[in-house]
Structures are given as C-alpha cells and as structure tokens.
Amino acid sequence: MLDKSSPQAGARASGPLAGYRIVEFAGIGPGPFACMMLADMGAEVVTLDRIGAKKNTKSVAGRGRKLIELDLKDKQAVAQVLDLLAGADALIEGFRPGVMERLGLGPDVVLARNPKLVYGRMTGWGQDGPLAQAAGHDINYISLTGALAAIGPKERPLPPLNLVGDFGGGALYLVVGVLAALLEASKSGKGQVVDAAMVDGAASLMSMFFDLTAMGRWIEGRDNNWLDGGAHFYATYECACGHFISIGSIEPQFYALLREHAGLTDAAFDAQMDRKAWPALKEKLAQVFKTKTRDEWCRIMEGTDICFAPVLTMAEAPKHPHMAVRKVFVERHGVTQPAPAPRFSRTPSAIREPERVELTELIGAWNTAR
Image 1 (cartoon, one colour):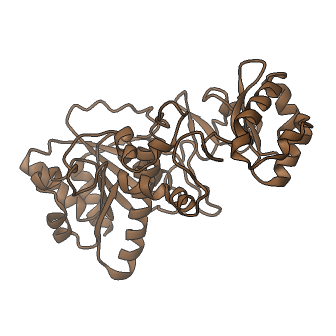
Image 2: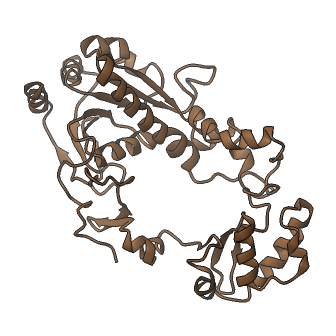
Image 3: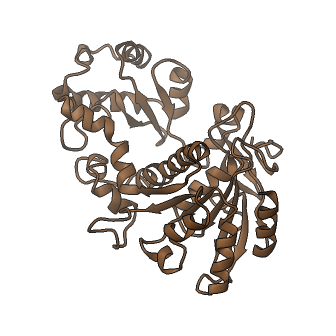
C-alpha cells in the first residue's frame, strides 16, 4: 500500500537545503532531475520557462518548483532575471555551450552581479572539446566512456535505460558539484562554475572497472565477467511462471547458501570462479530455476544471505513488502513515484506542490530577505 499521508508527500519547506535558493532554466532530462532532488531536500527552486509552456504539474521530475514564464529574448526580462539571480545561491542550466552567453546570462555577467553564486552547467559532451556543440543523447555519451560496450549480451551492447549517462553520470554529478561548490562558497564567499558533463560522470562511474581491468580481473567483451552476466552466480534467471529472479552470490559463503537452497549437489558447481565452466554452469542453473515459480523461489530464498531478489516491474515494485514498509514509493495526484532520497534523520526531505509565481514579486521577496 502506498502511503498518501506520508510526510514526504505534500509537505511545506523542509530538508537540509531549506533556505537555499536555486534558479533553474527549464530543460529536459538530467537538469530537471537534479533540481527535483534539490527541491526535495528543501531548496527553493524557481524554474524559468518560456511563455506558454504547459508544465505537467503531475510530473515527477518537475515536482516542488516555483514556476515563472518569460521571454528570455526580451532584454527587460533578462534584466529581471539578473535581479533575481542577485539573490540566488545557485543557477542550473542545460543548454548547449554558448547559449546562456548569447542571452546575456553567461557566467561572467552573472558572477559579476552575484560573486557568491554557484553556476551549474549540465551538458552531455561538456563545455569544450571537439563534440561540445554536437547534439547527443545518453546512449551516445556512454558510448565514448567504455560503459555501453560493457553492457548487454554478447551479441550487441544494450542501453541501460538512460540511467548511466543522463541521471547517474549527469544529474547526480551535477548535484554533488553544486553542493560542493555551495559548501566552498560558504567559506570563501566566492561562487564558481560547475561543468557537469555526462561523459565525465559516466567515465567516473566506470572507475572500478578500469581498476579491475588494470588488475587483470576484467576482460574485454560482454557476458565474460562476474558482474556483466557472464558468471552463473551473478545473473538473472527465468522461472516456471515466466517471471525472473536475480542472483548475486559472489562471496563463497553466499555461493554455498545458493547451492544449499537450490539443491546444487553436482560437483561441477565446485568450480565457482572458473570462467571456462561458467557457460555450462549457467545452463544447469537455468534448468534448476525453471522448475519452480518466482513466488516459490521467493519463499525459499528471499531474506537469506544468498543475495537474492525477484525481478519486479515498475508496477510490482511499490507493492513489495520491503518497499512498502520503507515507503520507498508514494502517491501524489494519482501518480505513483519514488519518494525523496536519501533520508535525513533531523531535516527530512519532502515533496512540495508546484506553484506559479510572478517574477517581480519573487525578486522583491528575495531582496527583502537578503
């Protein structure tokens, strides 16, 4: 059951960033997701969008904002935006390099007006480099980092949704960068530009795998390694009902439990770390898991140290007992969505309602508070 009365749903200003003011220039993908996280954590996020833009108030990534419509090609509107930024702590934009400069809102202009401002820039390729001005999407950005080549079956790489580039390597690194710059600004009194590029972040996420490669523990090619589906003890398996389960029994003690609960008495399973044995063992294990339904395997394995979980759909996930008890998902305006994360013991995050405001009124309120 989703908890509609949860304090995470619909609460007013709360969270560790309460009191911080962030101006977001409307975009798509990782920028809005980053601002959603900042808004959930209590920051007052104001989204500047074009006149006539029809914002979906039920949007998950767009939750918790104050909304202002304006024409950034109008010099008077740009002057007002500068007045607003004079009272802001951070700015976040996701245009191609040079667009903000052409609008008269580049870092030099804005930081001259507010030297303490953190200027967050979200792009795929980065602010410079041969590809900086080229269009692209998540699949393209992670292609250059080595990530996409390592994900999927042997036959071809498969995009892992847009989790690695847009949201993992993009939005989360932007949030970390903005927060780090805000901390530094609180000491130095000086702002700076945060250049958050998805190629940078996705490459950073691959750090462990570059490390494993250097150590000789990771080889090129998909479906060949212990974390890419190559190993029988770290994979997904179809059950008798057509649903899937996941196994992550890497450590010897966990692998021993897997063998015990799955009845893997065949001596061939002794060769856990023998890469040459993995294809045959994977086939044997696939046959075992097809003998029972997913629910039956859950009753046998869930909650043990096997490192087991059913593979749930987005419709199923909120109903799982663990997810329900922790209120990982909430319902807002009839839309099921993830609750704010991470969790704070003293200053809990919260989902707030979007609100349309007037630019001049907000400028006055921010300047008065300063």
